[in-house]
Structures are given as structure tokens and as C-alpha cells.
Image (cartoon, rainbow, N blue to C red; front, side, top):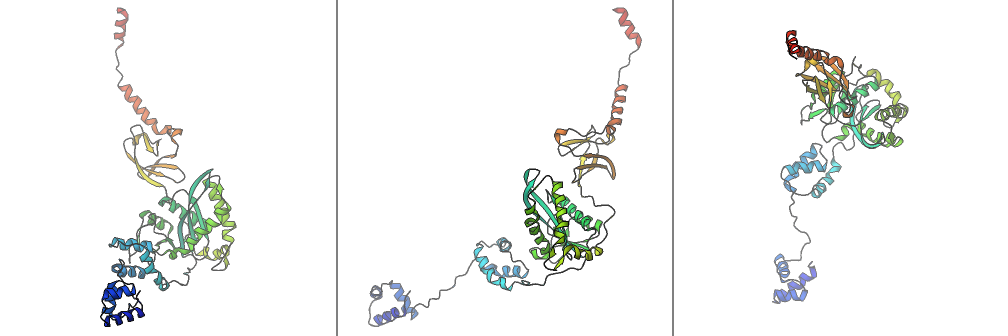
Length: 399
């Protein structure tokens, strides 16, 4: 960089009429540097003109997302890319970084709920050993907001049916139902979350809510802290229960140990926020819970099947008998999470089975097809060609 003393030399030599090229040779710089210095009437200031960035046209959109509570850089990057941004994530993170100190609600008062008001629900997963095999275990965690008492149930799927069964298991464990259930934005519960409008819930989740008498609530997108109590329990279970127990004989064994651990350890802990034993605090919350319904909600998978001419339906690679008079008709099928199979003609239960593997063969109930066989036999009998005895006598006399 050209120094002040270099400019003084340039200015003095220029006054004496020395050519720019000779001045440059004298100072060991480029002739254009001499020309720029004279035109500028001084040495460089050291301040370069700031160049615009690719992010500039999208900063207003970024600021709006931040104002709406969206601080996840990956989410923001996806949004501005959809608007045409073709830059990288580094410049975006550098822009967001200084603003995080201004993040609204960074230091907040913890939201506490009165007894019986709210239960928060969330899923976690972990790899462990069940029945001698390494598998991925999914577990649904449901925690009461006031007492911090929680329940979890382990299974092999996070679909809607297992989500609902997990909620039911927790209601039964608590011996009652809270007034509202706060869920994440998974499709098992929330179909669509619309800005400024109520969430649109899964139809079956609304049925479940109506059956048990709770109000469904959905977390705001990108606001994990809304359901922070429950999400912390996911980590608590991973670092306590699944550290103490590392293998299980079966899924039933896993859930039996889980409920024992809940009663013996999790319920007896002193919760650090409220500074009280969870089980003792729950005694004040339990009377505020709503009653359980007379019968549990049916979470079975609901499908339809066409009955074959032989009075069987196909379900998951095997065949199961239904009453023969239903041949050729469409029936409703309900497959329970306990591998039960129920077949309905309208609202009438017409057949019950247990799911079987292919090697176990078809599942048949004799009474289902007794009338069908009687009809077949009587039809065949009517079609027998009857001949008079005289025909046989003629044949005998001829021989």
C-alpha cells in the first residue's frame, strides 16, 4: 500500500516535471498507482468500497422470518432459496449471528399449567436389543404439565395408530384425562398448520379427542420450546432407562420394565424446577383429571377386503375365512396392534382371527363354510343324471 511519505515524493517529483513512469521506477510501484495518487490528491485511505452481497435482496425476507420466530438457519435458507436466492449458507449465518442477542423471549419465564390442564406428547427413538436382535425402538412420551409425571410406551412404529395407542396407555397409567393434549406437528395428529389460523387436525385424532374428552393443541412450527418439558423427557429416558437396561427379551418385557422403572424411579425423583417429588405433586393433579371412558378407543387399522368365491379374504399374505354368504361382497377389516383380526359386515362383527404367518397356513373356521358346502352338495345332487332301472336290466340281458 502507498504510504504518506511515498505520496510526498510523488508530489515533489511531479512538481519538478518528472514523468509518471520514472516516478514509478523510483518508488518501485506501477505508473497507474502514481496517476491514481495524483488524481486522488493523497495516499489511499485504506477503506475499500463495500461490495454488495447476494443476500442483500433477501435481507428483508430474512428479517421478517426472524420477527416471526423462525431462527433456524436451515429453514430460512430453504425459504429464501424458494424466492430465488442462489448464495451459500455461510453469509446467511453471519448475517443472523449478531441478531441472536436480540432474539425475543431468549430469557423467558417458564410456562406453568394448573393441575389437570395439559399433557405434552412427543416421540423419541433409540437403537437397542430386543429378542436377541438389534432394532430401532420408538417410544412415545406423554408428560403432565403440572406434576411433571410422565409415561412412555415402546413400539416399532410411529404411525397414527401407535401414536393414539401411546396416548391411551398414558391416560390409563395416570388414571384420567387432561383437558388438553399438546402434540408436535406430525401427520398422525396435525394435517396442516396455517399461520394465524387454527391447525387442521387428523380426522381420527379428532375422534380420539372426542372419545376421551380432551382438546387437541398443536405446537407452533419452529418453536421447539413450546413443548420443551416433554422433549427433555426424551433425553432423560435415553440417558437413564436405556442406560440401565440395554437388552430385552421381547417388546412386552421392554414395556413391563418401563412401567416398573417409572413407578420406582421416575415418579420418585425430585423435579428440579418445582423442587418436589413427582409422585407427591401428582396427588394434587390427579383429582383434576377427567374420567376415563367406559371403553377404550379402537385404534385398529381400518381397511376393506373383497371376499373370494370360496369365502376367504386376503390379509397380509395369508387367507382367513368369513361366513360363506358373504362371498363376492366387500367387508370391513380391523387389524389390531395386538395382531387381532376382526371382520365386519356393516357394523356387525362376522369373524375374528389372530394374524398368522404364511407357513402356518390359512385360518379356517368350519362353521363359516358349512352352509356353503351344503349348498354345493345339494346343487351337485340335483345335477346327477338319473336313469330308470330298466336300462341296467337290458344291459345285463345283452351281456
